[in-house]
Length: 534
Image (cartoon, rainbow, N blue to C red; front, side, top):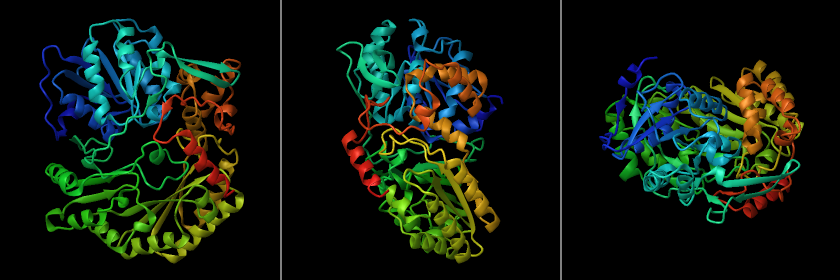
């Protein structure tokens, strides 16, 4: 793919002209251009850097790159999908930068990273990064560049020690992890001037992210994306998107959302409203009504996941009129008991009502998301999911039903971080497949093996960096991970420890030094409320 992909871009911001001594920087997305440019987080960070005259930033993807600076001082990665770590290592190699921070000298650039994967649990990747930005980029990015400018001409260690003082900047090499057999004994700074913990940074403004570029080469072709809400007030016990990003924040409709939408629609007619639960914006109905005006008649509107009990006939009508074919709702399970365990405040009749409303409003399909292997789940709960979906199919004939189902994976900073992956989940996905497909329900399971790999990474500690390097050479399949674990036997705990074991809630977790939105004591309370429902 040639640089012509960059020629197809409509920029919605004005890049600054770099000053003579601007910091030469590369900002990379460890996947193809099509995937990377569809990431709102990547777009926003790149634009933020490009609008600074003291930074001269160039983009890098796995298949295409801008003409990169010879000796960059900063090389950044936005990581939103765990397995993309392989591409980070490949890209570092292509830039002739040592993979491990300990092998880099004063002439090497500082390698930084951010994004949801690294904010949740940076530890499996800690040895590859010089610094990790933990949390929202809005304030963090500017603070990072300003602090870097202050030590720009000093040696590497001086730079890192200075940057470690900035809230939200984590310098892994300045922390020592000690182990006692499988368990972590302590995570401590190497000297007393380094903060003992790193606090995730939370942006509290009411102007949220919007696309900085629109292009037909994006995976979602020519889409203009607007973040309507950040985080989710529901707090389902397993959910990283809710717990890690608290508190729930909403964009101001009059002052920021509508002006942003009108700017974006000057270059495209595709609008995407994003957020973990967009319909929970208190003014969402008003925003939708605003979009029914004749001037928006040719706009194609898509909305990410919505809360089930907010699906009204009116919502469905407006979406259908604006070229949406279906709606997505997360139901987690057809079992009321499981929904109580995970804190999903949802009754079965609300699911039926949402489906009826979607159909009455003219939508063609409804996508439901669920999960197998949830802590406390029994085989009867899977049967209840089957029964519910079959009845739903009968209740709304003509509405295409899709059921996407993943395996429960423990995530850092959530009440379910201590649980392991249920070994029975694979069988349960197969059972669902067998029972649902003959009934005309489009069943889309997420691979159980992929869930196992996700769990290795989401609960991993620093010892895994060698494992990640090995699997990269073997290919990113579950077989490669098993082979690497075998090869490192005695050096790292086994796969079972990371994936399936339920951890004691008194043990030190790999991410214990990263302070998320809620204290450990609150997560334990939430965990206990869930267990009380078992």
